Image 1 (cartoon, rainbow, N blue to C red):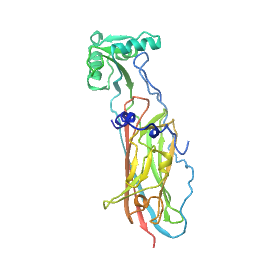
Image 2: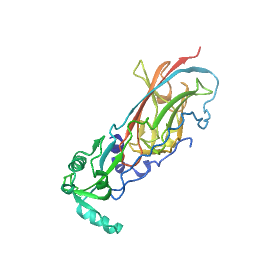
Image 3: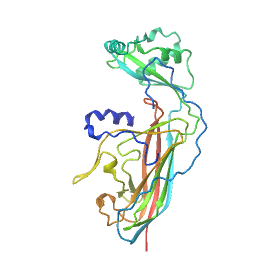
Length: 329
């Protein structure tokens, strides 16, 4: 998936590009293989849907002439998430020597079981499927599967690349609940002028009772926000101080961003908001990117992945924001 692919590329990047987790302008746990009960998501009442004001930003242009007006903002969203109630996934890949070193390091005996020794046929099939294909998903839980995965650190007897010992984690999901993350957008300042750039705000809220980890690229969580023309092959960059907030640079050869992964944690009922400025044509902030091509209808689109704990199956929140730039007479 996108999150894991980006994380896999971190090692080849310079250390200075990796950003730390953030909680936004406004205000997970790691599961080791075996030894613990499978993660369970607790049932809690949904959070109230409210709009919280973010911190204010000051314009940095000068003058007073109006140029455009931001109007008719609309949003649409779609959430894609696992539909099964139980998901079994590999969480560790070891060699026999590595298992011995782990036992020496922790001072704890590592429980190892050959898959063929699992008594229940359905549980055995689930374990084999998870190791061979990368996951097993079902709405029913085979007898003994949770107990077996909870007490066994590593399974053997099923090939998985060069690894001979595979640790598994069982996740209990709740596909019937409302999506945990809610997206919204609003026009904060509708007038685009040299004295006061227009402002569009993007919002993200955790409406669940558990912490959600939002995965994104640099400048979390919305990245570098471009608005594409609905009717033409044109776009412009809505402005924030991207270089100060992430691994972004504007050079003579173009706009460069690091292909890295950043996790933003949102606690239960927590929200964040980001304000993006629509700059006038005369801006000095990289006008080759930020100056709007002209009046018309524009669209912002993106997708964020999120999950409840490290390694857990991901959900994807896709959103689209449309607005119009109307010329001021």
